[in-house]
Amino acid sequence: MASVTIPNRKSGSRLSPKARQRLNTVLMTLFTALVLFIFLLPLGYGIVTSLKTDTQVSSAGAPWYPASPVTFEYEGSEYDVYEVPVDGRTEQWALINKGRESSEFIDPQNAAAGLIPWDGRWRTLDQAWEWDPVWSNFVDAWNTINFPRLLGNTVFYAVLSTIGAVSSAALVAYGFARYNIPGKGTLFLIVMATIILPPAVTLVPTYAFFNRIGWVGTWWPLIVPQFFANGYNIFLLRQFFLGIPKALDEAAMIDGAGHFRIFWSVILPQAKAALLAVTLFHFFFAWNDFFGPLIYLAGNPDLYPITVGLNGFNGLYEGQDNLIQAASLTAAVIPLIVFFFAQKAFIQGVVITGVDK
Image 1 (tube, rainbow, N blue to C red):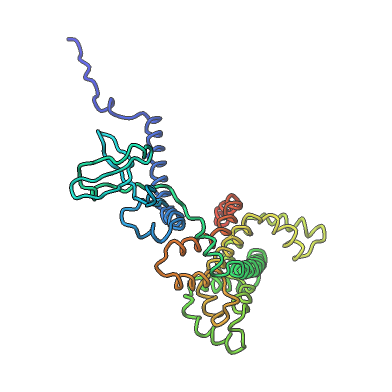
Image 2 (image 1 turned 60 degrees about the horizontal axis):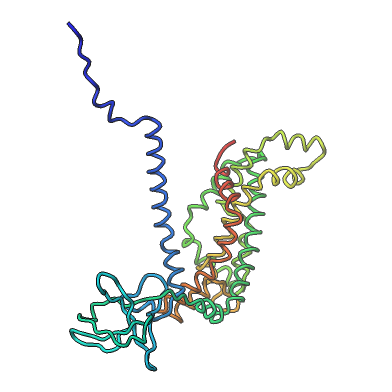
């Protein structure tokens, strides 16, 4: 008796490993693009809004991009241009005489032809718009709140506090990574505990202390504490320093190097990526810091950074979203430039600081 082979229907519907991998790649790419699009929506909204006038922002039926209504001058008067359906196509005609059921238009491309009657309700027509970005919003924002002074204050605060935060954290992290001292584990646990301590708990006593010594209204309460290290920065640098072979320290000691020479000539050159990551972390934090300067610089507007200055600008131009967005984008230019040029090293540093080599 001849045997009958029954085809496997399931095997025909299965994707090959190569096709499945390609499909997964496409789906992951689409998902990543969707997430990136959603993440960049606020930035896109800010850019578009910053290029509009007050009329463009508030006009009903205005397009999402910066645009102004198209108009046409006819016999010394300005008339709005509308999208008029004519014989299956759409023409841009200027509305001259408005009527209830019939109106008269003129073709801007052929004004010599005279008035054109059109049957229909003109209120149902869409107004024509043209691309019209307003770059002067950035100039107005720049001049209104004295951006050069605000940017200078912000750069001063961000750079000086970053130097203090990174240098002090590197020294403390080096001690935890290389020295065997009694109670080192307990000390490190205490340092890590400061990370989860809410700032609101220490706000009142800290402010009272700085006010007592006369530092309120100056830069000192914002800059001096940064020179006493931060638990988060210490943790990141310590993790990286632990991955540097101790054989390098021993070789340097044989050559007569002391502990500080080892730290300066051996550890720091090996930790450039980690140091850059911590530097950028703190630089962006200081650049965007609002609460600290608002509390300690109150009553001294000449020292305000960009964040506090923008807050005053928003209150002054409340309701004018175009100027507010223009000012905000201007303030974000320098951090974006810094991140653009340092993004490769920054991402590398973020990855390797948490990896044990």
